[in-house]
Length: 45
Image (cartoon, rainbow, N blue to C red; front, side, top):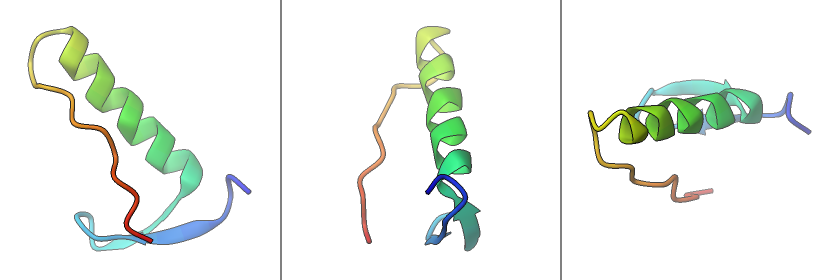
């Protein structure tokens, strides 16, 4: 299931669910460091 791919609108390419999770973790880290406000992933598919 984590190896399945979907088209990511902002990146304009296919990504695995595994990659989506990693991208969300990067956003959380930036939020915790105070660099950027966290805005969670909104499922569009």
